[in-house]
Image (cartoon, rainbow, N blue to C red; front, side):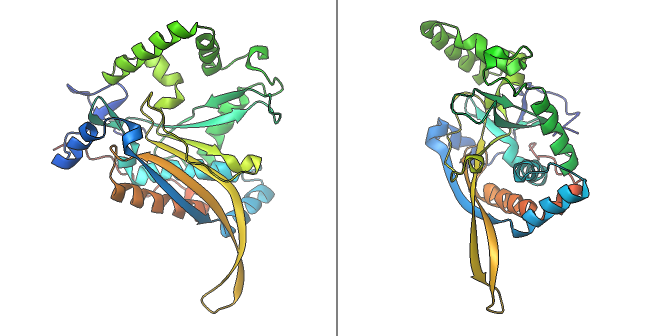
Length: 305
C-alpha cells in the first residue's frame, strides 16, 4: 500500500503529493522565510551501534534467508520503516507550499565498475508501507539486475535503463539549450506540471537518497539535497569504527559503530519530527530483526484540518 492510497485529489493537490492543509501558522510561513533548500537545510551527524547488526547479517547469509544481505540494504529498509512510523518525513516543499508525498521512493547510485573511469547510474525502487526487509532487498536487487555491470560505460550498455537513456539524451543537448530545459522543468515542477514520466525517472523526486561512502573506505559526507526536484532527505553512511567501551559493569566490550550524516529540509518537517524519525531509523538499523515482519501499525500522514 502506498501512503494516502485511495485519497481523492482536491484543488491544490499535485499528482505526486497532497497539499498539507492543517499547518500551524509558523510552519505555513517558513517556506516563504526560507525560500530555498540552501536556506533551510539542517545537518545531522550521528553514529549507530551495529555490533548486533553485523551478527544478524552473518546469520542471515549463513542460513540462506537472504544470502547476499548487506548493511546498505538494512539501511534502506530502516528508512522505509521510519517513513511508515513517522510519515511527516515523507513531505516536500514546492512553490511555498508543503505536500505529503504519495509514494515511498528511494534512490541510490550504482557504479558500473570499481575503477574511477566507470560510469554511474541511479536506481529508484518504489516501496510499499507494509514491505519487510525481504521485500526491500528483492526490490533493490531487481533494479540492479536491470543494469549490465560488465559494461563500464553507459553508452556501451545495449539494455540501458530508462534513467540512463534520459541522462544520455540530456547530456547531448548544447549547454545554452540545457539551461533553458532545466529552467522550464523547474518552473513546471513548482506548479506540479512537470511531465509525470520525468518525475518517475528522476532521483531528485525521491523520498530519500542514500549514498554508501563506506564502500570506498570513506567517512560519510554532508550531501546537498538539490534545488531541482522535491528531495527533502539525503543520507550518507560511511566507514565503520571499532572501539572498546565499558559496559554497565565496567567491563570493556567491543562495539562497532556506523557513522552517518544526513541533510534534511527543515521546511518539510520540523526538528522534533526529524528527531523522532532518526530515533526510529537507528532502532531499526540496530535491531534489523524488527524489519523481517510487516509493521504492526501503519501511520498515515494527517494532513487535513
